[in-house]
Image (cartoon, each protein chain N blue to C red):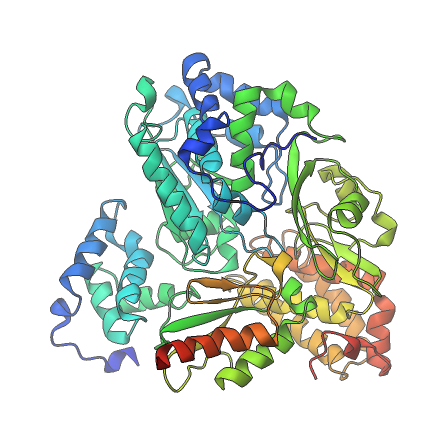
Length: 171
Length: 431
């Protein structure tokens, strides 16, 4: 896959803003590859995900091989190597949420949005992913939608979360 | 009892800014240390306090610190203090509370710890999902630089400290201290071989101390009020207070600060309000997903490290997960093993290949495809995957703790599922 990436303009692929932020991180590390995760996060924050082109450009800028950076990018679950929707749903299915019925809540989310784990809605608004325990077990079951933590999930709350969001945009 | 760690955190908490924090004795510990105490004095106080690490392992903090080379024994260069705020142990939700509502308490504890250790750079390594904590810590750090509680020559002491919040890119294994250090260095978070220990050769090969959020919050008060005071706080053999939590089907799940040594029964019945109507307690994990089950026979045990250890489990993070009589214990263990199999870093074979194998066997049993010999297979896996020294780090042995104790206490539930008369469809069923 990576071999198929042909970048004639790899040196100009990253924006000035991205390069500036990455170089800011380089001040804190003794060698360039030390900023690998930070660089991935910076580019992802601008572009939503890490494409093969982004990966190649970051690797070159940090003087790393593409394979080495790929090994890092695919290790971490909050680095996305495939396109994601505007908001990522991090759905907690760890033990306390499971005891409190997260499987039923997950079915409801899937029903409302018509997607399963790893999938993105056709309007590209949401991507649904599982996440390790979100540390809000006293309010289980829980999920994050973008940066917002939504607790004590039940059918009504799940419908309200996603229906409100879509009706706001209709206005 | 006196609330220490949550003195600024009310029942309906609001985040505390610098002014409110200072109004309630905030940064008095730092001022006292700089005026009266040498780093060595501070280290003695922490040692004498008998504080044990609150991240799960319970290692004495003062002893951990004593391995850091100091003065002329340390080669020139940076020393690092890292706060482990990567709270991801299943069922654990205590550090979030401390960071969201009283960020300055943690920062003061970190400044005092760095002063003691001679560290000049401090990181708060925090899970990326804790967006509120990240923002409030960053705001608090800005306030500290303005007051010269951070930065160069802090309050004229000659001691300087830079502090950064470092949001993680995910993965449970980052909570293991050497994996965390690799993540901070921008690498895959595989744990490192020990020795060398991080205290000698950690971040970028320099002396590094990694401590949990709650541990560092305790330092604030230990330095300010002394080791003797701290020891009087415990009800049993351990000193201090602790954040204890309860999740699962209880009436009032939550997190409370109580003295060390508080009996399990008081936490579950008085604080958490007991079991929901119609349910009975069948078992509980005392301190997160990688601790052994205990049962209703253990409700009168004190939540002290050695007491819970002697009962065959670990106090871990002190946040209990309750198994009720309508939830299938096999399903609960399957959920945990699925988590640990997914979160294995993949570095060593028993963990990378063994945990998915265990998950497969449990899935078969849970879904009615189990065979009698599966129970022998599970016992075999517990022995070899759980054996200390068989794996590169403690993830896989931790994963085996709920399984081995479930086999001990809930064996008949496994057998019933294998015989086809299981009752797991009552709750938590997968269809």
